[in-house]
Image (tube, rainbow over all chains, first blue to last red; front, top):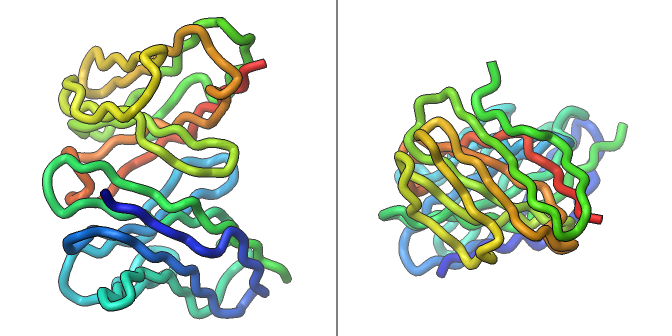
Amino acid sequence: AQSVTQPDIHITVSEGASLELRCNYSYGATPYLFWYVQSPGQGLQLLLKYFSGDTLVQGIKGFEAEFKRSQSSFNLRKPSVHWSDAAEYFCAVGASFGNEKLTFGTGTRLTIIP
Amino acid sequence: DTAVSQTPKYLVTQMGNDKSIKCEQNLGHDTMYWYKQDSKKFLKIMFSYNNKELIINETVPNRFSPKSPDKAHLNLHINSLELGDSAVYFCASSQVPGPSTGELFFGEGSRLTVL
């Protein structure tokens, strides 16, 4: 069964600073990987996804993520964060076939300080 | 126009009561889901329906019964509520089953508090 680990429960960065959120997955084949963002009181919104091809994927709101098979990682990055980026970020992994469910990590809460 | 809408947004009730949460999507998607998010923000799938048919049923107490009258609606009924049922319940939809097509569209959640 697939699993996702987000090692950082809470990260605080200054506005304008760069950001990297970590995600490690466990899956026997090539996974489908996702990052979702949850703003307070809202549902989750897809930031970006990786299915195949270029291992560096671009998403919305200036985010990008890099798939590294050798490290089983899919870290999310942003070169310069904005106060509006404060939210909960979830990494998720899905099987590359059938109706398999999407498995989410436990999330990383991002706080932005002025 | 909200793509995935859930009602009610907040629900406070006593142990032992029965309650329902409704979900509707206007995206024309075939697949709908219920997820439970606990107090630690852990998000776990409960059910998935594709075109009104149940395709995923995780290990969920049978006090939880989903119902899909048509592919645009997926309601969740909970009998004999327990304290541990307190959580935020998210409805979601996708164009086809499985994650391979990518995006899940989530509702804003229904926060259930059992006293």
